[in-house]
Amino acid sequence: MDRAAFERELRDAGYGDVLENRSAPNRHNDEHSHPFDVRAMVLEGELTLAWDGQSRTYRPGDVFTMARGCPHIEDFGPQGALTLVGRKR
Image (cartoon, rainbow, N blue to C red):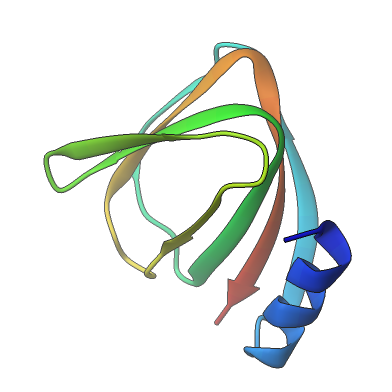
């Protein structure tokens, strides 16, 4: 899926906030949660999410969702990551 199609999908699904998020190389975010649902696509770099005893690495073109309130850990690769993020409150 390309960026424009993903943005349309987000808006059609009610994700009112759509933004780019650039994360620094090798950044680690301790366990936390968000007060909104997230649906995101990795545009550059890589991001590993860990939740519920599992982890998965996402690379360009990969899409992921995270329900509001879900505790998770974020680790970014050596080039960091650029993601297109939709937030639904």
